[in-house]
Amino acid sequence: MKAYDTLMLALVFIPLGTALIAVMLPPTRRRWAVLLGGLAWPCVLVPLSLAIAREQTLTLVFGGWSPPLGIGWRLDALGLVVLWVHALVGIAALPGAWQRFEPEKPESGPFWSLWLILATGVNLATLAADLFNLYVALELTTLAAVALIATDDGIAALSAAMRYLLLAVLGSLMYVLGVGLVYAQTGSLAMHQPGVVELNNVALVLMLTGLMVKAAIFPLHVWLPHAYSNAPGPVAAIMSAVVGKVALVALWRIWFETAVDPPMLLANLLGLIGAGAIVYGAVAAYLQPRLKMVIAYSSISQFGFLLLLLPLACQQAFQGAGFHLLAHGLAKASMFLAAANIVTVLGSDSIRHLPGLDKRMPLEAFTLALAGITLIGLPPSGGFTGKWMLLSAAWEVQGWFWMVLIVLSGLMSAAYIFRILALTCFHPARRAVHHLHARPPKITSFAALLLALLAVVIGLYPHPVLDLLGSGVPGAGP
Amino acid sequence: MSSAIFVLVAAAIFGLGVHGLLVSAHIMRKLLALNLMLSALFLLLIVVPATIEGRPDPVPQALVLTGIVIAVSTTAFALALMVRLFRKQGHATIHPDIDPDLLGRRHDRHQPEADNEQAP
Image 1 (cartoon, rainbow over the protein chains, first blue to last red):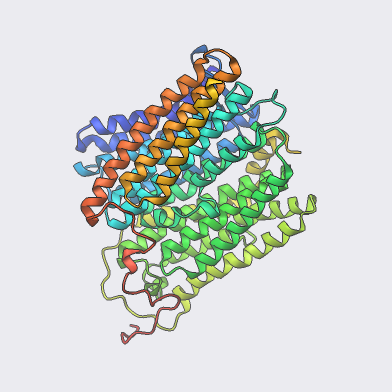
Image 2: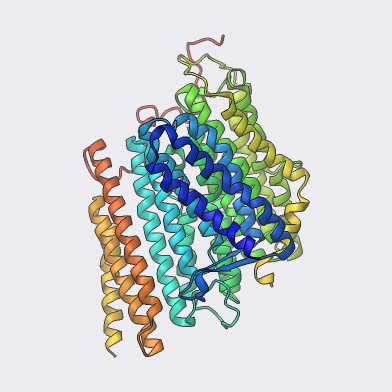
């Protein structure tokens, strides 16, 4: 058991330690800290996965101080899936970030430290087992993410970062207010509160709203499109794949584990908000004039699916939502990485430059198409498996509205994906772009393609992940 | 009895903060409003659990201490970001939803219009 404790510590302290070391090292040596921080902690996930498959949850309490004063960590199947998405996307985004912010340059020092601190924050938020520790982890994640968005240093990026920061602070303020009320009611901050009869609804709504701001769920999404589309490509990839998701996973945990018997009305309301997100995101994605904006609005639409778990609330829905989280994370990150390469070469991501892209950048065009298959949810892909599980969960609980919604959403995703693909491959005006910039190294294209392929392959072999998720349903569902 | 006063004061301060956040355009004012709301929040966190326990409870105080540290560092970071933004655009407000990249070519919404340039 002690060995796993060390491994869980490594998940947080490797990126944190290397972030601090990266600041102190001279620029010529910095790359070793970056490589160690970026590649070492994903290796730790392999033995941890084996342990989770055997024991389902791992817990760790620091220094013999029991909660609430002490800090406890907990890793379960859902957390493991989030960590795997983070690890895979983090590794795939590394070449692109490396090429853009070479560690040898003195001025790219802050970027790499922030990059590693973002990894620390995401891992910590996944492991946190009490409500306040989660708040600290989410704040760390947000601050690092805001600073990374601002590295672009244009007015657009700085404004997007500032808006994200203001809204995120407001969100965490509401979350902490809810946490304070929970503590006043129960005298405990643990996420798993078996003894509590019923959580105060005001506290629950405050915490959920705060987390929904951080996760950019539809009516509270205003910061997301500009933040994602103005961030450097690798940063946008990490953010869309995991930064929003950790807040959503925290929302699930609070819903199923902290709130013992949440009211059904609230569940349906949150499901409807999810439905609104799915429709709004898809329609807005269809209307965007920039490729990165299309991908960003598509994120809002796909995040809506993750809220459908609350009204469906059964084991299949949990497996489906967890799987969707994995598939969407991989596909969306690969699209952002491909879009970053397109911006580098064309100098713009306005969709009127897309015609003829399949001739000039075939790898990127193929990546967009392949990731699009997962986003639409066409059969052999990971996105299909996730949506299919959600669909059969809706059948099981006889939620006909949700069934119609899930089927329709596939059509709407197809609309915005095919708009991009049709412009790329079939538009009559396949004109030359006046000025092509230097092509980024092939490895960045292959990294994006690999993520998109992975999103399809997990659809062909879904059983290891589904079995893992099935063993660790939080609160066992009603 | 006395804790009721604190709760009311916290609510009033929180309301002032919400008003400031919504009404003012300058980022500095928005940050001040957020800090005001945070102060109200910390006041509430200290007072409310104490009324239930009946004696000083160390846990909320530890939480508030951590919260203050986070609030201070977040504010410092936000101020630095504001200064950066001010130097770039000459005013410290967030521009409404206009993407500077697209200013002046708003017309190209859906379809790439056919150009006089020919396909190779």
